[in-house]
Length: 419
Image 1 (cartoon, rainbow, N blue to C red):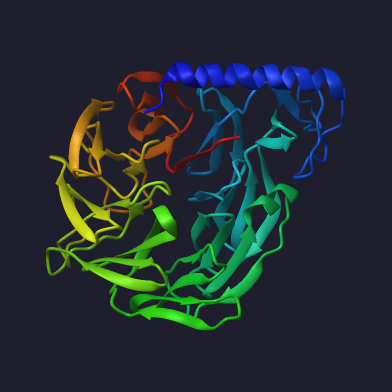
Image 2: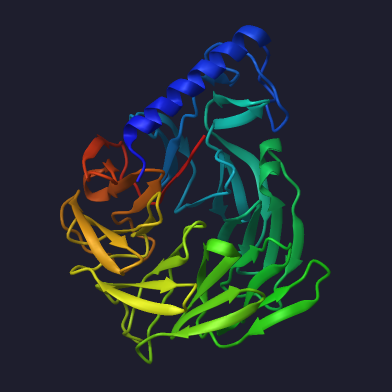
């Protein structure tokens, strides 16, 4: 795993490059900074929302609460903005390091977290501005999963089966235009654009989900599997492999075909997965109680997409669907109800480290209710503790709690942008 002093050196080098470029380029107005290259030294952000140039990228953390969205500095956890929006809100990064979409009644609403980095010759420029809940809404009924894979971002509407595909870099324009397609029938589904520009999406109805298919850019079906009952979620692995969870195992799409990996139990549901595009392993949850209102599992699944082997890892405590993450080297990270982060070596399917972070907790029955949540960005994990209105930063190499803060509201959803 990368050492922190290496990160420090990289930041210093970036700052030196930036200083040299600033001297050469002079000042520019950043009212309309988008994906076009612009450079200059800029003054502090003013009331009009002008951008401030930074010495290096400035990541931010974004969390929801009942009635709003809070944006934090990812290093200090200082509150940057508290944006009001009614109701229970879901957040998904679009993958450009700056924007997220908020699931609202009429679709996906674009949220600008206010930090971004642009290429400029042999170096980059980074900027910060005020976060903004924009007026841009990508219309759909019952907004569902958002998937960023490769150079594309895909939004799936559960209520109308609407699939909206974007070139991720186009979000820099603030109002990108999607390519639109539709699933055969509306259902709680997901879609992924593949490297060859084919589209993989789930198939099913409002009452039953059975599998997935792939269509090429001309709309011709090239692969199909209906051997994935209750298909849910997705994750990407190395070599453009896509994994979908099933009620009896996991379904992989690789090398142009679907391959099913059966669970060791007749009912072995994998509904939530976490991938790493440089790793051949998929981390997933694992449930075996078919009819219970809320199972509290104590095992997770690790799937080797090269060998098609599925292994189970005993954690000694339960977890929730917001507990799974991946570290910088592809290691699994799970936040368990004993208040610890469990670090998993996917090659051996075993727990290698346990880091105590928060108090013991119990998953609420209603999935919308706030519960401790994990978000991993680079070499650190962010862990929320709603009962105490806290967020903690944990160094994944040492387990050290590097910082924590108390928020004005109990955090619910938790994510971030790299800037």
